[in-house]
Length: 73
Image 1 (cartoon, rainbow, N blue to C red):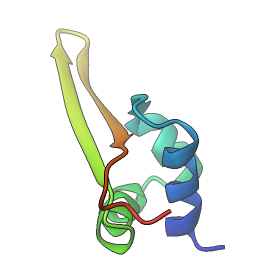
Image 2 (tube, one colour; image 1 turned 180 degrees about the horizontal axis):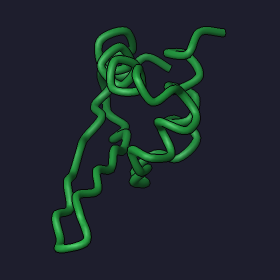
Image 3 (cartoon, helix red, strand yellow; image 1 turned 30 degrees about the vertical axis):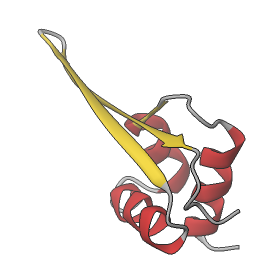
């Protein structure tokens, strides 16, 4: 199984739930997790949304898979 397939599996396991960028980096590698998000979007035609929360404590980023008609299961 490739990292892209593993990430797709994670997103499908938790549809609609926000997953922190820190968790994605922990599971898929600090230097490549964003590339894997992009590959999931392209390879599986998946809608993966991003939100950023900025505060005095810092910036946090989250991603979630939004199931739809175009995604390949």
